[in-house]
Image (cartoon, rainbow, N blue to C red; front, side):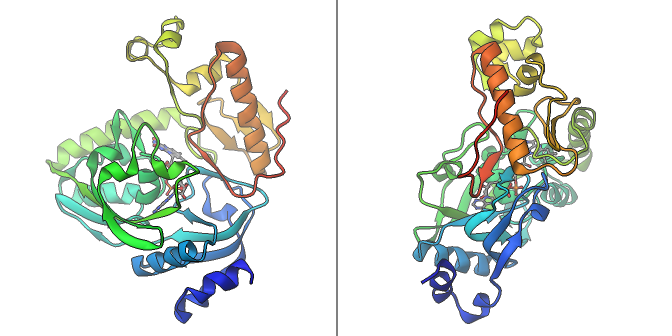
Length: 329
Ligand SMILES: Cc1cc2nc3c(=O)[nH]c(=O)nc-3n(C[C@H](O)[C@H](O)[C@H](O)COP(=O)(O)OP(=O)(O)OC[C@H]3O[C@@H](n4cnc5c(N)ncnc54)[C@H](O)[C@@H]3O)c2cc1C
């Protein structure tokens, strides 16, 4: 039996007919790269998202949960198995907000603003869904989504259940769902604690955040910061040009290291290290996923050679990378 047939046998007939084959994925990602999914399912309701992921887990069909595609680099060869695209957008706003994980993160900030609820000001400028934000513990300006989470409704081991925030094992731009080795899981909904606040205060904070982004971020397609910042007090102390607050905090931005290693403007095919922000890999047009990953390997190698630290990706490589051989020069 082929994977699609096995999966189908666990699905109600109404959902079986919604399974597509060989769907190109590049158009669902902000980097605009990625080959086809063997099987592709668009989930608009939480019940359907639960049903498809329960079916995938029970039938042992490999699956990838796609949100806004803003933190992934999908291989040119595409994804074997199923891609479930999360477009579930239910939301009950309040001091305890309960939201489907396909809800756009920035739109959630706007909804909270209308309701005079603070806590999500850092979400301005972070594309993607609430689900993607949870998985990578998205944050900015020293605020992270993990601080707002009260509980989550998940599918794991073919069952649906409610778990507390500790289940996520949150850390800096990380959670258990980013790590291979854990059983696959889907977050369906989350309850977030927001705080009543005057609209003017929320707007002021959000505007400050947005202003900083406009100057720093490139306009080309990207997946945001490609590498994680480095927490290393010894390294920070050795870098005289590092701004003082970062040296004191022992945090070295990956963009600082990339720029200092001469990576700004480096190009592989259609991919480039942005001249505006050295931690952004941009698609200047026609880049392949292989171009992007090769360029990232070059940056990692240059930074390792100059500073002795190994940068770790914030962006996730997804799909079939079996043929990838980096040519690092
Ligand atoms: C211009 C730009 C600026 C950015 N700025 C920031 C920033 O300031 N701070 C920051 O933290 N990030 C930033 N990012 C990165 C990115 O936007 C965030 O990580 C975002 O939260 C990812 O959400 P997504 O829905 O696009 O996730 P996707 O890219 O679709 O998925 C990322 C991972 O999460 C998993 N996933 C998604 N939803 C679920 C779910 N419901 N259940 C289980 N797994 C799931 C996917 O399987 C995948 O492994 C930026 C990106 C861009 C392009």
